[in-house]
Image (cartoon, rainbow, N blue to C red; front, side, top):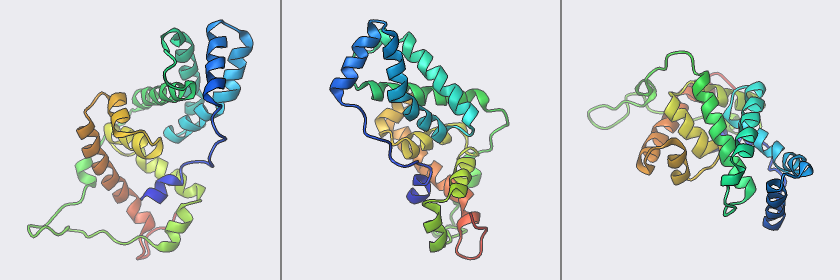
Length: 217
């Protein structure tokens, strides 16, 4: 499962600017220097768009979320205390903008996650044991754009809270505590819901990945 989720992550971006460079840019931004805003876009715009593309289904949604995030950043620049890196702060704002867009764009009724979770017999065995995934399909999943699209599609079928937790923890690699803060729930709730979300996502992907002749990616 981890490999399949990792196939959604693009090649590693270039290293972040140094702490000193970011601090200097922050000072220029606070002084209202026009060139500083262009430098901010050069430094962080690509990273912010990459985050939004991982979390949202379309490029249009991703670009709108980045615009919303930049506006929010500019409006709240005076509140940023500088204790975190500027890039870290912008990442958090981008994630929040994506969460807002996911919630406002949700139209169709959601199914219960219970329908996707494994069920058990009285002796503790699963009523439908999990089938192994084909090794060749797992290898292709590491690099396949088709698989990345499939994973995004299936994540989009999860109920909202579970979808958000999976995106934050497994796609954006936020810590349990960071995800809990972003969603306004407890860390224990994040852990429980993440486990269920991973189970449900595997159930949705299973027909496409099985070694017994299931549909290939």
